[in-house]
Length: 66
Image (cartoon, rainbow, N blue to C red; front, side, top):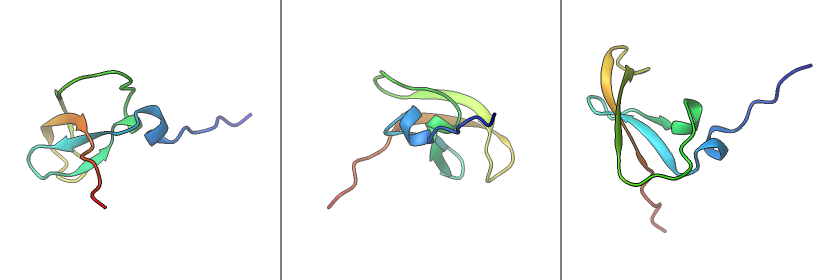
């Protein structure tokens, strides 16, 4: 039986992870859950774009302007 893949935006709605060196962003739900939080969290990890171990920030997605 095949497992359903959950949409990353549903796992952590409104949160993204961003590389501090190249500003590459991805939805945080791809890596984990973030249900209730305030502020920013920093983590070490490999950036998919620059292919190096970098400090990345987990932050709230800025609201889209109309």
